[in-house]
Image (cartoon, rainbow, N blue to C red; front, side, top):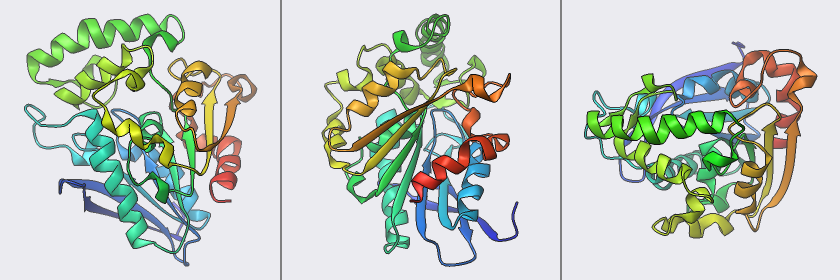
Length: 286
């Protein structure tokens, strides 16, 4: 890691006071931007460390953090832990945006959303604080959008295996094959949305959908040609919800980068620094 970057683990309170684990990456000079990196489902913040450090080397103060019930923000036991997926947005992401805005009020606040992280921006009431947003593989995750045969594997894993196991043991074990273990109601709400043709846009109980028009900045929605979880129709459906944003769509041709897959997670691997990071960082910090 560069000697020009300061890295510090910290915590900050969610909107309801729950303590969330975070890491700050800062240049030793005055930052030009603040950047919030928002994780995918069941993905701990450590996955984003190389990209966060890269952005800090470009002059931005960057924060990564874990949603409640994941990584450093998980309790000792997830059994009985009260959390829904909507809480990640309305309580955790909302507070993360407010925290960075309060600490760095005089620089632009940029937003990186990976998968669920891109979905969450539309659900938070203070998304008007965000100057611009870069989405990486962020989609409306209806299972039929997924590329075959992955769509059938996801349906089997989430509905026919995951839901019964989660109800039985009281949480969703990551050993089932989707990443980190998840709180019971996070997993059940997520799988309910995955089964709906318009994902959470079809959930009449999700009042936070009213916040989508609040984001009015530039939005770049990036997908990978070899990502079975976020093909173009899924990305387009989510991006279409941002009715007042200036949306730019980009699909990266994975075949141009050789045999190694990019997929849903590969953008954030350090070996993609020269191939992928510079262009997106130029836009994000523009």
